[in-house]
Image 1 (cartoon, rainbow, N blue to C red):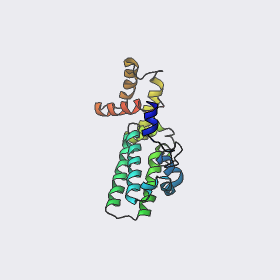
Image 2 (cartoon, helix red, strand yellow; image 1 turned 90 degrees about the horizontal axis):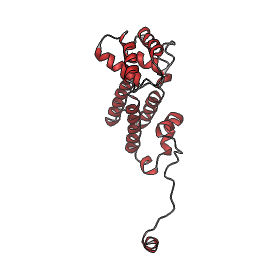
Image 3 (cartoon, helix red, strand yellow; image 1 turned 120 degrees about the horizontal axis):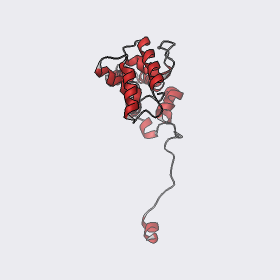
Image 4 (cartoon, rainbow, N blue to C red; image 1 turned 90 degrees about the vertical axis):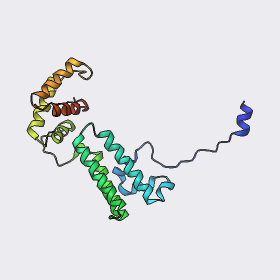
Amino acid sequence: MRHLIDTYIRAEESEVISAFDDVSLIQLIVERGADAVNTLPQGIRQSKEAVAETIENNVRKLIIDETPINPKYYEKMSELLDALIEQRKREVLSYQEYLAQIVELTKKAQSAETAASYPAALNSKAKRALFDNLERDESLALAIDEEIRLTKKDSWRGNKFKEKEVRNAIKKHVADPGQLDVIFELVWNQDEY
């Protein structure tokens, strides 16, 4: 068997296609801006369309992955990405303008928790997510956050009784059952709680 493998199967040395070094394309774009395009494999880098689609797909994946943490914010990011893609396809933007705008959008999507557009009292990702998903009502977001922190117990996720306590804490501030479900799901997905 070894003789057959050695005789009929050849393998050349591996070659480095791209020097990502365990860093995602999104991180490269955030760190290097439009210069991150130069780290893409040559086959992709040669086609502006391929570069654009690669970046868009990576940004879309980031948005999809982060949506459960802050649905309203990432819904806005998705709409901005869709608009940018449409502008690129209609050739409204030059390639350099497109790259500059996609880099800016990527930075916003990657670092939502550090956005300066929030009031100072909203000093955590969870508070900002509540704020975004509660019609941008700062006092309500802070009240729910405080209520959850006072109510939740260790390992509350997966324990029906502890989950019900957290749900009831939210219910004190949110009467609408549909919105209650949305906020509970949002709280469930937060690492801070």
